[in-house]
Picture 1 (cartoon, rainbow, N blue to C red):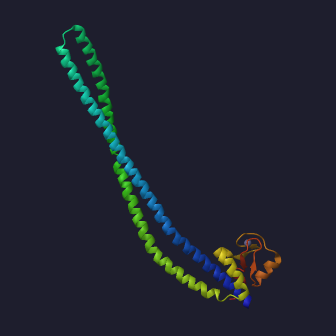
Picture 2 (cartoon, rainbow, N blue to C red; picture 1 turned 90 degrees about the vertical axis):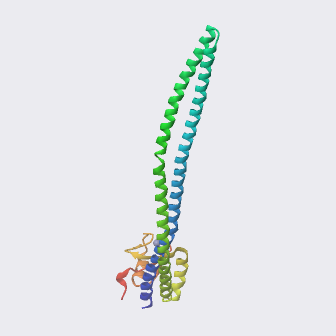
Length: 240
Ligand SMILES: [Zn+2]
């Protein structure tokens, strides 16, 4: 009778340990979710800053070129003045060539300014999407924090309830089994226990000897030689 009780108790304990492992996993998932959402927000903020910086840099480039053009135009006006006032034909011609060359250079500069302005427009169009990305990531983070906080309270009280249940059921174990159980559960938690699955350990799938299988079937608790789990008989042999 004692062995049958132990096997049923181990079955219950295994269920409780799995439940605790599941609760622990769900509790640990909360902070991980918040960390992941925080990283996404940081990435979205970086993307927004870089989109804004791109626009700023393009503006600086366009402004510089416009200033450059202004001073080049002033230089041409100056050359034109000199040409009008010049005394020799040769001087007139040299100044004319200089003006023509500078005018050509300014045309290239004007094209570059046009390109720079178009580039500003195209870079500006990426900013609202980057801003929306930040807003979405910030909302996702706030939602995750709220969800995790709401769940944590419930999960923690579940853990307390299940631990109390565990303590109560553990007290039902016979002393000799309790010792083995404590040792294996301390190291492996829920993985310290496994049902016999046919002729194999339900934890590591290694076959057990026929003697071991027979002992388990009559309700004895046996240690798997391969993985060290405490093996117990599955439902069917329990005389409930
Ligand atoms: Zn095993």
